[in-house]
Image (cartoon, rainbow, N blue to C red; front, side, top):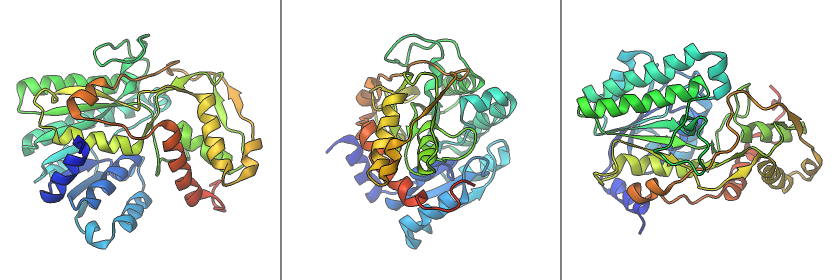
Length: 349
């Protein structure tokens, strides 16, 4: 039995109370689905700035009425300290996913990024301290590595930030380190590398590459590739992200706390390779998609050329064992998008 299997068994026999911020978003909704399926008590906080009510409705249908009754939703804003305090009341663990994502969004509106990702983070951390939360686990980002040329990315080697978003996530880690020294505050930061999977929003100007391309192809449109397609990323499937959040919260290893961890699969995929995987999976359902060619545009400001994670620290200290290669994750993701969107007459809205 691996560490994750042990933790699941522990939770089933001894349920806890969890707060998931950003619970109506892509990552947050997958986390609450997992926790509710294990009969945990879950508090959710979201203001629907980037999350959706239909994500919560989808989770409700999956987990069933009895498990859904264990979910206490707070419509509120992490930028409001009182909302954070109310949500933290009686909670054992906080999984803080709420943020304004996207490097381009942060360049377009750095003030909004700072308000959510720095002020909001600070409010949640202080509320967790005041409530006596056992551990505060939060979403950091691979963007903190900035212009560091080192591959693979190792937690102790970061460069200069390339965007306001990256700066905001780095500031989170600075605050966490300070708070662990001056308060009773246990934290773990998770540096996500290009997370993908079901419920990831395919629409809007800041959509991530996998849902954006999938949406385009399902509409028989040419997917837009920024650059020459040889930019590479370490794509991480959502189920592995859920795994590491739970492991981080429940780790009993004293060496594991008050650290940041890379969260990825530990492999590099170019955008051209990724597009091939998406087209291949979609073509199994809709053969005509195989003939759709991409369009290539300029590189985006703030993007790094290559990214690859060293996940040795998470494996050693948390027991993290990623189960989904990018190919395996894409196949499962495409099954969901086809079921949700193929043939939808409102797809282009």
